[in-house]
Image: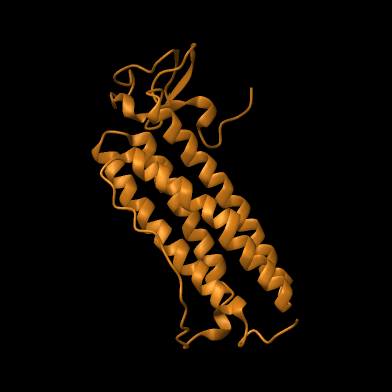
Amino acid sequence: MSVSFEKSETKRNLLRAFAGESQARNRYTFSAGLAKKNGLYVVEAVFRFTADQETAHARAFYDYLEKCSGENIAIDGSYPIDLYSTVLEHLRAAQHNEYQEYEHDYMAFAHMAKDEGFPEISHLFSNVARIEKVHGDRFGQFADLLEQGKLFVNESECEWMCLNCGYVVTAQRPPEYCWVCKHDQGYFVRVEMVPFQMKK
């Protein structure tokens, strides 16, 4: 069922995806602010790291709409409102929303794009869907640790890194303050969860 891009549902799905990614980026920025207010720098960093990736997704979807420059495209859609009082609630909401995009939204958009004759766009939706699964898993992991009171304590000794200066300490829990830069415990994360960490 090949259709023209102008008349396609794929065109509208690209804009829906752009709108969703743009909103996710802002929601995560707001959530990062709440985490910072609560002294949870590591959770703030997770939200900001993910927000930057949502910006990249938004750009990828938006670029496919270049031929529509100057148009206003009407779309319908539903988007989450996540105005909670706790960081844990924000993590769980983000986890849920990422899985929603992975399991339902983007896979459906990928199938539609393929059916309409846009294999490259279908591939994009599929790839971003898989990334959203990673996002959901990451938010869930931090939510579990926070919920279980294990964000800053481990059952056995492990390596912890200060995300401000990179100092690494081996202990069951990181120190109350970093011994190098004096930033508080909220900056520490298990080394295995640090982006760009080299395998031993």
